[in-house]
Image 1 (spheres, one colour):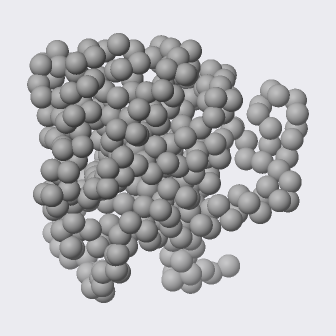
Image 2 (cartoon, rainbow, N blue to C red):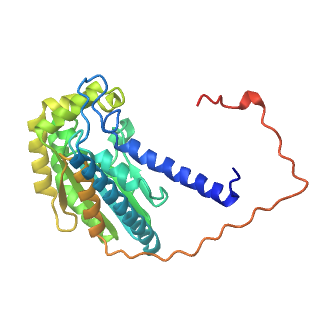
Length: 308
């Protein structure tokens, strides 16, 4: 059967689209089999029609919101806005998941993620905010902090990594620091992802028993589980002392991961009066062909074996 070249091209484009959709599905696989129980569980549980409908609704809404995020990104770049978004919460609260969905379709030159490790010996002698200030946005940029300067109010306080004087100085300084950012034209948005004791326990068990997620567990994570109540007190103090009109806290109910992602993205979009930026029509130019050009063959020894 003869295939029209244009039809063949369309099919190839469709296959590429399907591949991209498969990547999206991979991100959403909470276990190793879509619609089935965990391997080895013996349950053989399959999704009900209602669960399938809810999953489909989630995907549709996520893709729609991600389309709006692209519009927001273009508006931020064209209007030279400067945006900082902080994501805080307990371990396994789902911060990384929502950050991944926000940035998934965005230009990393416009929207970037900052996830700093523990400070080194030199950074411990600096002004506390110095290493964070180095990552603040220029005009036309959005910066997402996966944990932020609020480490001092949380893990550093609970684990004893800062003195009481340093802790109190943080609370004296952080409202003025954030007001200074806002006065300089930086939008500061702060999210706290809230989960229950039982939900964190369940998610930690999932990480322990899933070899693909075990890397997410550190000794610090396990210790934070033991000190649940201390973290609760620290969180309550943090929000009480740093919830300011210029940079208020927003609490995301995160027991349901998918709802938390959609709610957070929807709320984030509502913080801006953005408009769609017109894009010029893109015309693909024809390739220049030189009759003298001869493509050199690649040595077989350099080729990656085709196992699949």
